[in-house]
Length: 383
Image (cartoon, rainbow, N blue to C red; front, side, top):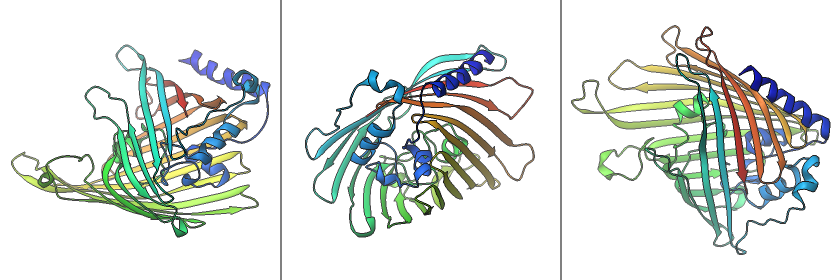
């Protein structure tokens, strides 16, 4: 583990020595650098998945390093099959070398993502989007499909289908406590509809979905509906050399479940609310933060959970960032000693358009006497 930590930082130093420049953009942290909106780079106004023309052009221009420009050659790639139909994709493979207390280290390659996107621009305001993810044994395929009416006055849009509800920061790291346990990522898509508006400095969306974890089943099995709402305000100063985005999210998820003795069906309820922020400084530093409060009510005592998340990202040169994360998960705020924490640090590099690699070392802190550090090296291919 120590040798891999040294290798990680040596790689960072070598990249710094070779070239120097400034910008990158994509993911929530990249939007924070410049005060951009998710819809500036993605087909889905909430962000993630397929990139639109603006996202592709930005990636071609900014997600590369001067050192590798000659090696990669001039980028001529276009995602358009026809004028109206475009394709895209993401492939992520992870090499994990995690210390497992009392057992052999977990050391293997894992296929984390394999998505092909197709988007049809039927007319000026109507899009139809389809993606089919990889099939992991024993886990439902991660797929998303929706029809969307958009590009209306004030960026009004209406979306219906199966996709991730818009809640909090839509970060890539699905193992972050608030994504994994609060939202059931990475297989958190739900069927429903969402309406939103995004004029200038405001974003607002409200959605109605099947209960969390429920999709195409007998309709009478669980007639409840989950409500999800999110809003944020973005303010930029001095040509966005300083920008701040502050927002809040809420969901209420009633669902059918079995009582504690398994004899009858009862209605449980899982709800959460929280705030988030994205801050960009000098187009080089991005700070992300999120805090969420969750309550789960069944016939058992109420369980109140707290999630905290923070990121600090620094652009060293164009295509290279230093990254750090802090995570907190208090499983039950009414009981002592139920808090887990994790600190992560690493480097992310975009050598040329279409390829990203990231090395991260994670230090879980639930029991400091136990050696359970994690090393993860991710290879991400995209178009």
